[in-house]
Length: 320
Image (tube, rainbow, N blue to C red; front, side):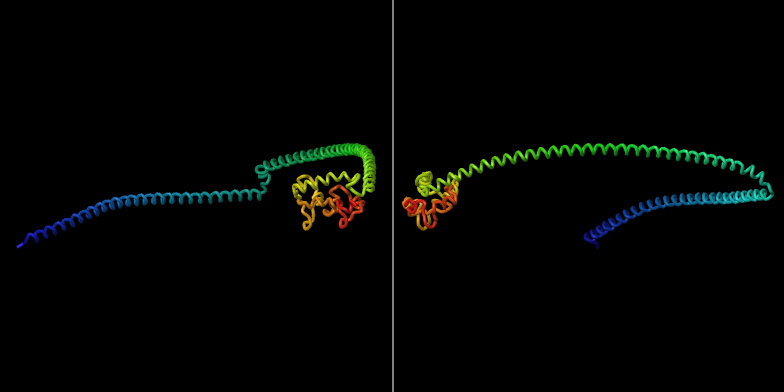
């Protein structure tokens, strides 16, 4: 006896078979549609094939027609060639049968007339060319003559202008040379005059200074006292302010002035009491540079009979 489970299994089996049947029906329907489409495409292909066959038939008919025309043209051409050959043979026969006069009159007279006309035209052209050639020759000759005349005229003018300019240049150069000579002579005379004046002035001043220096051996006595105030002022300024070389430069004093009051480092103190002893003849030996700082020349230095290693300008050697 069948149980409920068996019935349920049968129902499930029937449902599965139904689902499979539905799937098969769907596939059959799809195949049926494809068959319809394929049949339609087949009909289209058949129709296209029919059209192609008809086109092929028409082409074959046209080819056959053209082939017939070609054959016809061949026949016509062959007939024309045969006709032309017969005409040539006829002409040759007429010529051979002494029918030359009639042949020349009918066939060659027009050609001969044309040749004669051409010869006439050629003769006319030759005459025109000859006339042009003659005219060109004449024109060229005239132009050459004119050019030659113009060139000669220009050459003459250039020669005259160059001669005029050369004379003017010579005149101007002569005038400038004369002026330069005059100016140079004037300047030379002025220079000689000024030099003579300066030379006499220098000679006078040198003699006066030499006389004063030769009559005064002690610069701190007589005329030499003109230097005393400067020496005392500079010594006092240096002692009180301890000026450096840079400071002397700032005051516009030459380096020689600084050297004049610079004591030996191992013996003197420029800011101490010993600086005052320089006036007693114990310190501050003067050098040639010191004399230069005072404006005294080497000759003046020698004029005092001083030796830097032996005498002191401010010391007892000079005061005694």
